[in-house]
Amino acid sequence: MGEENPAVSCSRCSAVIQKSGTTNCWSGDPAQAPPKPGNCPSTTHAATVDEAMALMKGEGEDARIAFVAARVEGLCYQRMPGSDAVNARWTRVEDTIAFAKLMGYQKIGIATCIGLLDECERLSAILRAQGLTPLSVCCKAGSIEKLELGLKEEDKVRPGTFEPACNPIAQAEICNALETDMNVILGLCVGHDMLFNKHSKAPVTTLVVKDRVTGHNPIAVLYGQNFYYKRLQKQQLVVE
Image 1 (cartoon, rainbow, N blue to C red):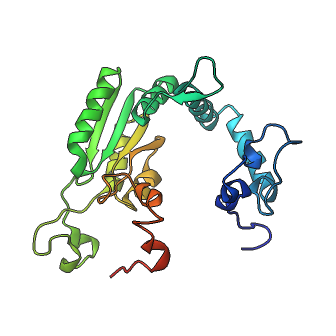
Image 2 (image 1 turned 90 degrees about the vertical axis):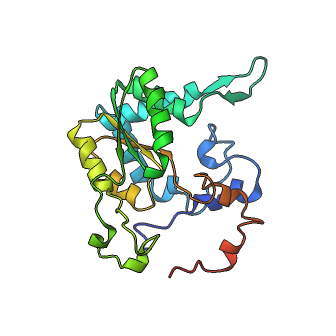
């Protein structure tokens, strides 16, 4: 990358590599903060950081979202009596509900995978119980044959059968037409989630990240990387 946009690698911060201390950006007292890495974005992209903070301190929707998100983060934790320790008390579902309520949102669009329709209805029931209005749209809405995307028969999960294509753009546009205040992704495929985010007019959050192997818990690969998934560091993933 050019000097105007130097590369960054916060994952290589000294606090991470040494597995001790805090990162420079988490240290409140500059005098006691550990040294910044040479490519720390706080320095190499300082102007961008300042411009972004100006947006979050302004009067627009970005500022409201930033404020409420930070407030929900604080509400998610509770202090332990007689200790400096804090304990998380809310799940991601509760965070999402709290965020929607504090933002004053009412209509909550749910872009769901067809394989998670049961879970989608459970989420909808929770949202209704919380006084919100869930509006769910399945990824296969329209039932368009996959071959119309230019795929070959052998590209299907089950060749020789009718297989509808996911249509995340339609999901987003339907939510747009319904004038949802906020949209929630529930297990859309990689790429389909990108298209939904791109075409959604309302802010989008992800509640479930699809992972067909780990029960929709993709971080399991990172937790097990030193043993079960070490192969991903040693050999190229074959895509054919």
